[in-house]
Structure formats: C-alpha cells, structure tokens
Length: 91
Image (cartoon, rainbow, N blue to C red; front, top):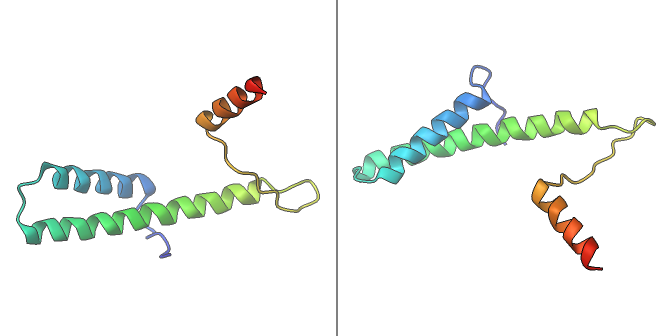
C-alpha cells in the first residue's frame, strides 16, 4: 500500500473522493473524462486507505498491554453490540 503523501491530509483525500463520486454519479460525461475521474477517485481512495491503515497501527500501539505486549481486540460497532445484547437476552 502506498504511503500517504505528506501534503495531503485524510480529510482532503476524502473530499476529493466525494467530489469525484458526485461527478460520476451525475453521469452525462464523455467516456474519457469519466475514466480520468475514475482514476482520480482510485488514487484518492488509496490515499484514504493508507491514512486509515496508519491510524490503525497507531491505535494498536496505544492499546498495548501493561506487560508491553500488544493486545488486539476486534472493533465492535454499536450495531454489533446491540446484536450481542439481543442474542444474550434470547438465551
């Protein structure tokens, strides 16, 4: 995965991706312009992914155990937690 560009922040990359998606969703673009936009969108998506992967690594480092070992625990979204509570009640 490419490293994030130093000058481009996550929010800027996300803005660019959203802008490209909006233009492509409108349609009515010539094929060549659509392909160029698609390429820009892929680049912006890769930038976003690189930033998110870096952030994930930093969070993992911060979640190390007291013994200095890394303790990875899966991220549970609010939906997952609600589903688990429902399953527990049904038992």
